[in-house]
Length: 104
Image (cartoon, rainbow, N blue to C red; front, side, top):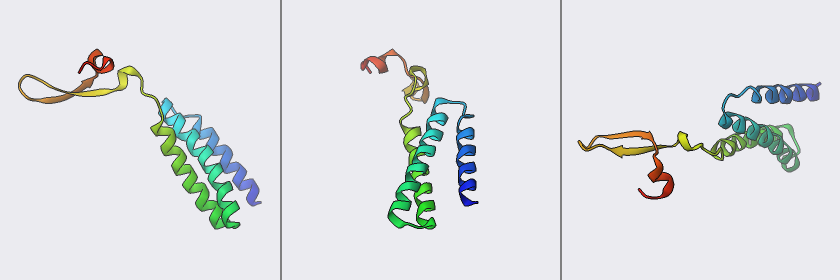
């Protein structure tokens, strides 16, 4: 009975991960899914009980989501730079070509 619940939870997580809108959300969801599965396996191998498996799955899912989100490449227009106008006010705006060419 417990195996059926675990399988249902994994399938629901996979289905919800596919509903993400942005690439960053998709990568975070996929990372959480893979990390959770790997963490559960490692937790079971180390501890050999349910508590270790749950802790490993939670830790792996968290780490996988963070890594998946952090490794999402940004498109050129998505990066923001800080600029200062002639009156000393600082503002943010999309980076111009000087940033990408290294001439800033």
